Length: 493
Ligand code: ADP
Image (cartoon, rainbow, N blue to C red; front, top):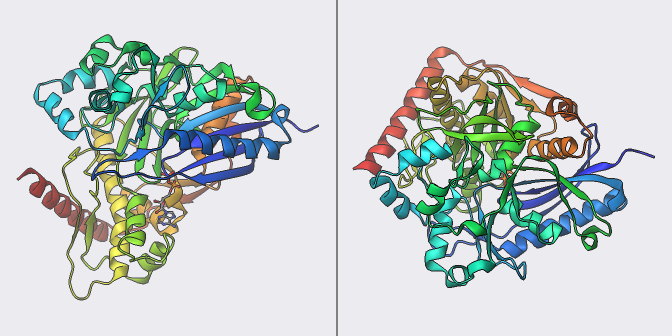
């Protein structure tokens, strides 16, 4: 009889997926459902928490069936969109309010007020994060203030990030959160690994509503028998970017991965010592195993693939996301066009939530190909800005391991190598987030003795080498610097 499979639930921002892996890393199947995005007001982004659950369960059930039933599955791993926060009733297990999504900017003013009052140093020191609406804590504080269903729930209220919500539903009542997801709430002291009383008070979060923080691999619990016909152990959990980092085998200090999906997220492993950034990068937990934490520095870019989606769906400038590649190749250069994709503010290293995007350098000779090319170039430039910040923090990159939906674009992969002057590595199997969760689940159920052993699940890679001459590269970098400067000047004036 063949070996039992690992089932991964990968709950992303725009879709939920379940995937089945063989212990040697082969992907045996996947099932996906789109997730509805709700934009009730400008800057607000919500998901229906019940839909997150029902589509995750439906996808997982399809994979359990494909595996041949629950007893053909050794373990479940969970990975998820981070920072997004869910509010539910302990008693009924039902969501009490919409989930507030990581992209939501409704707490910009609240964060600015706290920043002005001098609280950012404390937040940064304890959490490795900044005072920005991106992180969960301000979203919880806002909800408690504005939504009576949540405020009045009292002892019945449970609050958690998405993995926490899913594990509660799967197990029928367990309230845990893994250390990587907890590290994104701005409520956790990432040095000591627990919720921090001072931060919990600062954001006025009811302490009893928070989950128990656990490792990323281990025997957390089992699915309730009725979910899949028999109980399946849940043994791996990590936020999506940390899971991708593990899936790319960034297991030693200096190893770096960049994921280009809706946004772009770059993590460099910094080892077992917590390192603080002096250049507005984030410190975060890479994983926690056996109570021991490994850390990473992170640069988050809010707009990556969403720019291509916007050009396609709103401006109707592209027939498909893939057409951006064809168009970029059809012109010799960007024709002087630059795009600074600050459609929802600028993330690291600028952190300007109020910044707005620009398309500059247009003339009558600019065509949609130049705009498509500038859009892809913006990814390389945003990454280059981060590379500079990481290097200044003493975490320079050797090779850049890329993944995410956008890196199907060969032109972009080569442009990254050119602009960064680095070897860029792209795995043949680009679903590294799910793979990382499978590796953790494999460690958690004892299939592997360590992450290093689980690294055998990672398959072959393709390499892109830098090939742009210095003059053209300098010209590109100067054009971008000018465009960003103009955006920042407008924002700050
Ligand atoms: P997420 O996990 O954040 O939902 P994915 O990793 O699935 O996102 O990536 C999807 C994003 O990648 C979309 O925003 C889409 O516009 C972009 N994308 C997909 N294919 C390409 C392509 N060939 N070229 C450029 N962008 C692409």
